[in-house]
Length: 106
Image 1: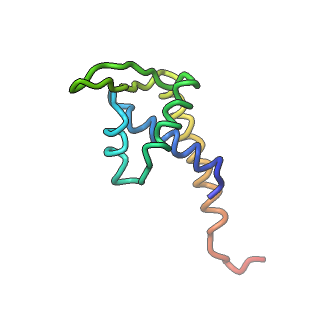
Image 2: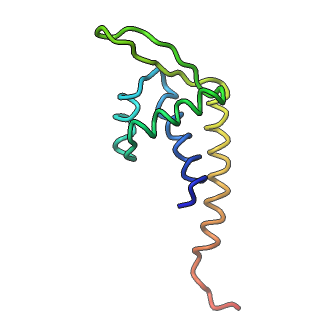
């Protein structure tokens, strides 16, 4: 798979994992696990990129004596998910064209 396409897909997957409420790294990985495997290092790289793009906000809070970062999706993050849905519809139309069976009408 094209690396840029995969990168974009993973970004949207992370946004989707936190769209229903604040979350933290381990929980994001756990919530995504039924759909795809992601290492912690990959996740934290994506989270930092999304934070820099203002698609999520981060706050730190103590949990069991340790600082934990909590992530929340922003309006821009929700907008990226909606853009992805529109883009994916277009991709699926192209996919259907490319994979359609030959009807013998050359």
